Image 1 (cartoon, rainbow, N blue to C red):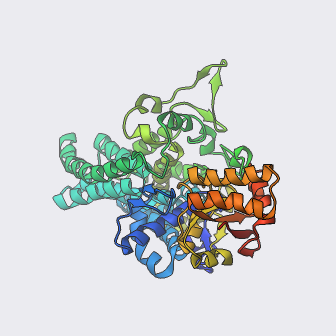
Image 2 (cartoon, rainbow, N blue to C red; image 1 turned 120 degrees about the vertical axis):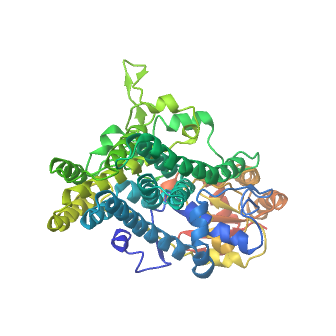
Image 3 (cartoon, rainbow, N blue to C red; image 1 turned 120 degrees about the horizontal axis):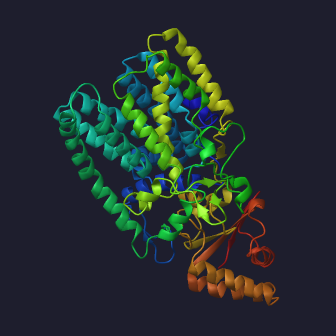
Length: 538
């Protein structure tokens, strides 16, 4: 299933990677490469000069857990192979963890298979692959944490409690959204319970789990917060007001998205993105899963231990994923011209960790997991129904869901001019067009030269100075050697030696077009291939 979901990347390992090109895909590949690159050089992956030329800065990668897991493969086979194997592994891991959770809830192997199929191809996880957000490939950690919490609450014992605490930490380290979902299930288990034990016994069993989970997670959270709030951090964490805006617009689950099928997106980045971004925020749950869950409940076969906790945690994730106010098509729903429709997230919005989250639709992984497991209740005691149920789920989630045909795949082959740049004289690199979501960071994994750019935007003060010199020279009508000297003088001063021009129709027009035309005319490319040119400025 994992190979089919990401086909044809398995057949072209290292040449193609799962994910769309104009998303966060290249940032994720760079993050996987950056950590082992620094560690093998004897440096901590904390402060770097690879970005933010000339001073560099502090950088905490968004996906430290996957970066560590993938490091051996990155070092031996490269980031493209490592990323593809990482995605395949997470799809399998998510399916297996959901399988184990459903089997623990219903004590039924067929129920486990249904949950594994449903969760392994859940639209919220498929959209994470398509969006290239490796930190969102955390569905397996959530399902594993729920399983360990369930076992700790049901059977007790220091070993199970310790493992459950570790599971909470892994879910949080995988992604803060999956971590919050794991704590939702912990809280739901505390409230609803499993088996016949009383509230006090259950509380004692889960208390150690919570204490250990907090103790293990807090240092990591503190380290990441410290890195992201440094004055010279290279990530550019959103301001509080911007986070609040995203939580009321494009970052939340549109209430219609839970059940809408076909080519339906909200927000639709194909319409609202200026530069052709290919993101999709999908939280479709699946009519097949709703029907199977209802069938299991009606037949009385879905009464497993932990079912109540799954229902409560799933409901919490369902509500919180829609944010502090109802948003439709990426905009808050306004009544009578000035009143938004409030939702429960509004009550906790100012509290940690809720205040630091923005893409709340990702919390839909909790109802997706809950529904995948509960759908398994329909085949408890009816194993012959399992193949038909699995087929129904696959038809629904792969053909009817808004993520049908996704994820896309992208070429990971680096063009020859970038390979040439690796052996060229030292100097910083600036890129054109000056828009985010392009493969400039991935190219750096080959040429290794510092970029006059931040993590999320390919421009900074030195690069702006060089662009300004190019535009001024072009506007002044300078030609030939006069143009070259005007640009070279500023480029030398700023230490920027190379301009890499990518032909990208989706990023036109660009305010730097006139500069690029002049550079092409008066400073011939040092290396050129279809769609890309490298100009040596001095």
